[in-house]
Length: 166
Image 1 (cartoon, one colour):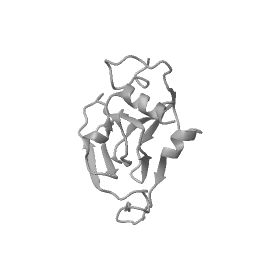
Image 2 (cartoon, one colour):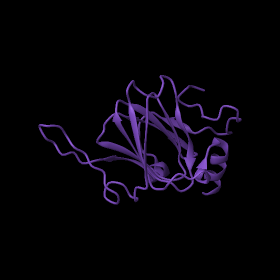
Image 3 (tube, helix red, strand yellow):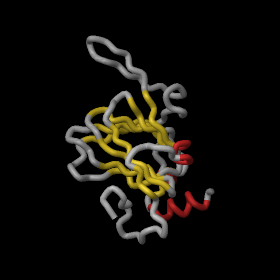
Image 4 (spheres, rainbow, N blue to C red):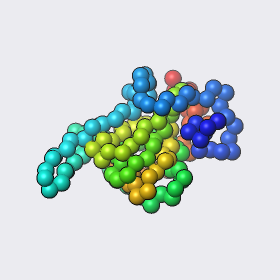
């Protein structure tokens, strides 16, 4: 299994049917309905551009928490979990990184490198973030406050829950 296809939970056994990895967002049926690229508005100005993100307008939820990842060491991975209810909008504020999304049937890799584009991630989608460039900043807008009970941190528990919900 390649580095792009491996799951974050190294000690678990591989699933009977590993999800396919798509290199670019193509027709993705269910994953598309729960995840999508969002183009944010740009106000162009000779003094510098401005982009704003508004709850209910650019994201389909009220923003209750904002956090960001930075100074990520080369080769490190973040994420490696899914949320039962939480929704997120992920934005590359500086530099670039990749996000692999997995709905239990298909895995799709997104390359994030524009501060005016966000990736909306709905609930029950496994995410892994890797390939951070030097100096990158990943900002996350979340629909809920932190709640450990909302997490699936074991990939195979997530798979069981995702596939049983069908």
